[in-house]
Amino acid sequence: MPGDHYVYIVQCSDDTFYTGYTTDVQRRVAEHQAGNGAKYTRGRTPVELVHVESYDSKSEAMSREYEIKQLSRADKERLIDGQT
Image (cartoon, rainbow, N blue to C red; front, side, top):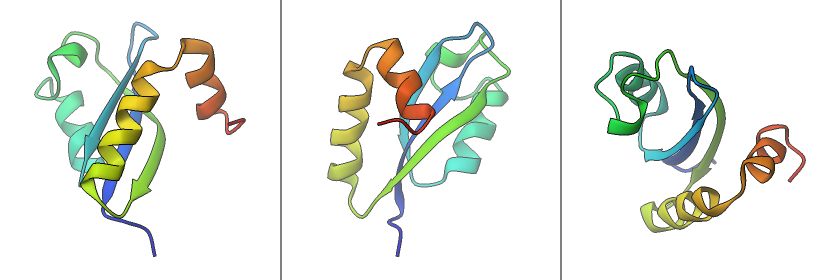
């Protein structure tokens, strides 16, 4: 059974990626779309959800979010394409 803590990646309109943590992916993406999400995504809308991972605990998800943020763009693209 999947966890209820999520790490997600959205692709912004300027072709950059934003990685975040949430307990409700659809709500969070809607917040980004409305310009009420992270400061980074404001002005970079629309965003497109391109990757989601679920975890059983917040600490697991936050650790994974940090790992993804440390990846190069090429590595993030491979992750999104399912190659990692």
